[in-house]
Image 1 (cartoon, rainbow, N blue to C red):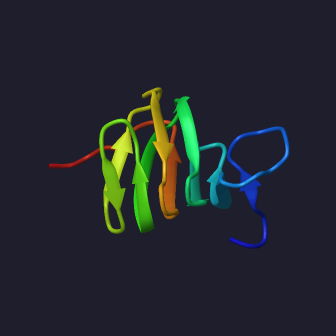
Image 2 (image 1 turned 60 degrees about the vertical axis):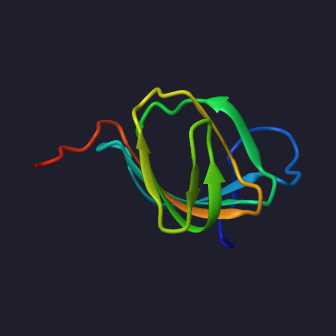
Length: 107
């Protein structure tokens, strides 16, 4: 997570434990973003929501929210506007994919 590290929350000094993001891809016209997010051990983000459909894939460590704990290899997604909190006890590395509309799913 070198190059361009940004703190998820905006403003104020950066004091661990926090979540860090590294943008990998963004297409503003199509409403698509892909990020790596690293959470310091003990990082916590209080109740919030994203304007986009959110997909989460845990690469290392674990991430918890109000409903479950996700571990390495786990995937989940959230509807745009779904309120949630997020935290990690021991640290985490996740791949995040945001889109302005939920992808079409063929069955």
